[in-house]
Length: 209
View 1 (tube, rainbow, N blue to C red):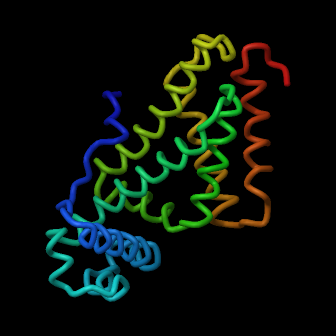
View 2: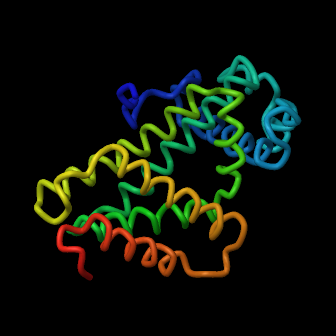
C-alpha cells in the first residue's frame, strides 16, 4: 500500500482570506454535513446546502465549483476534525495504552455529536474514492505512529505493524457505528475501556493489566 497522505494535507476548496469568509465557509461545510448526512450525496443539493447555511447561492460558488467539490472538502474537513479531536485528547503525559483509550473516547464523543460522518464517509467510497482512501490511510497512519512510539518507549511489543494499526482502527470504527450511531445509551468511557482491555492483552508487552 502506498504512503499515507499527510494528516494535515491542504484542503481542496478555495480558502477565504477574511474572518467573515472563514465563518461563511464553516457554515457551508456544516450545512453540507447536514444535507448529505440526511439525504445522501445524490439527493442532496447545492440549494439545500445554501438554505441550511443561510447564505446566497453566489456565496457557494465563491468557495466551491460544484456539489462534488464541497463533498470532497467535507470529507477532508471531517477527517481533519477527527484527527484534531484525537490530538487534543492526547495532551498530557499518557502511557501508550492510555493514549489509545483517550483517542477512542474522543472519537466516540465526536461521532455521537456528528453521526452523519458515517454516511458521508461511506458514500465517499463511491463519490470520491481518493478522499475515502485518504481518510482511512491517514487515520491508520496516526495509530501506527502511536504504536511505534509505544514500542520505542518499551511499553508495547516491538513487532507491531501497519496491519495492527488497521485492526485497531477497524475495531474503533465499528464500536463507533454501534455506540455512537445505532445507539448511544452507554458512556463512551466505558466502551473505550472495554476496547482498551483487548489491547492490553493483545499488544501490551507484558500481556497483563
